Image (cartoon, rainbow, N blue to C red; front, side, top):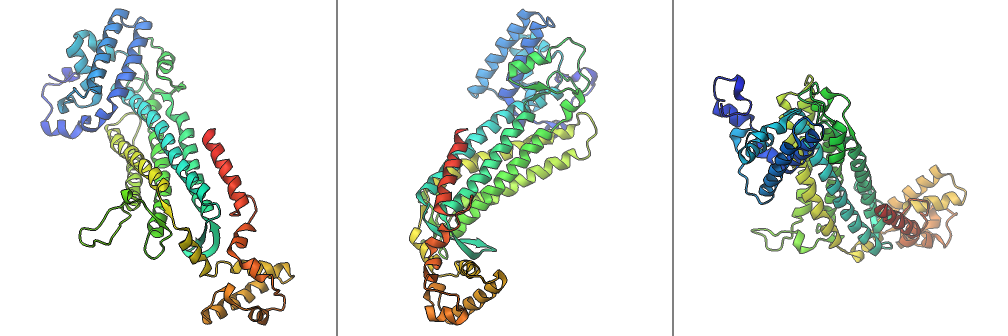
Length: 458
């Protein structure tokens, strides 16, 4: 039999079965992690006297040679060798002889693959944290340039109250900050070592799992071998966090699409992040934010897919768990690509301050301030609300905005109005008086920027 596990079998594997069950087409992405885990494992085997140290050194040399081949893209991975573990072990035996077969002493592919994925996600999670920070820096950059730039704030996609544009974009900074914190926290659970759990019940060899954890930089080892080989919670958690990140990316992308439309014209995306039409030469399409918005569905699908795989699995390892990798790889690649594009797209975006200001001058987003004005004059808020509702209706019917109404017109609705009502209604004043902590007043926005920059330095 050609298989390394073929001693018990009397027939070769059916070719269709071989192709259907093989995972090498995608798990070859774990080649470096697989070799790293094997290097630590064989070092421990030698130190514990489970195999001769000279054999351990020979195996290590062979693994390092294969790693160089992988780095140089000189390895052809074969479907008939099933997965990344068997491909590398077979290459090792071909390179150094039968002593290479000692590498698998005291372990199983079950704990081996789990270890590979822990190593992979640890690296990728750390890299994604840095990419999130790049996006946050771009948002802070836009915020610093636009503390006093005013934009209509919306609820229900209807103009509500004017806000600082810096305040608006910083809302996304804090979304991504929570995402970053979730990734950082997830590292505590990613940093558990499964290796040494064997197929499900541990091993008869006197291994030192703590030594392997030390060599690989893990904080702890799984205390239960069955849990260790079957646990995919750390991947579920990553896919969940990834889905939340893509939700935030999608929300920001939606605003970029809206803001850059002819109807809004609040921002203009750099030409390098847009495409044209094959038939309409005037078009400048925001394809990048549209695609970022669309790719969110991939992340959701990967999360639901793994949840579905896991929901009915008995302990311990089952072949179903082979389906844990492609979705994980896809979400990693989707996040990497999305964040790498999002940061420079935000950084190079042109903010059309005059268009935003014109929009604020031509709406009723300062209406709440009239109500507050009357409340300070002693009118109950509910009565003030009714008065302002009637004023807005009158203004609409008169084809005017609130700043266009004369003092005499205001007094027709309430004798409490005085000449200072126009100062109250000025957009800059409307924004400036919202000076509570976390508010949109320039003073608070500057404090928020300082707080945000402090987060990036922690």
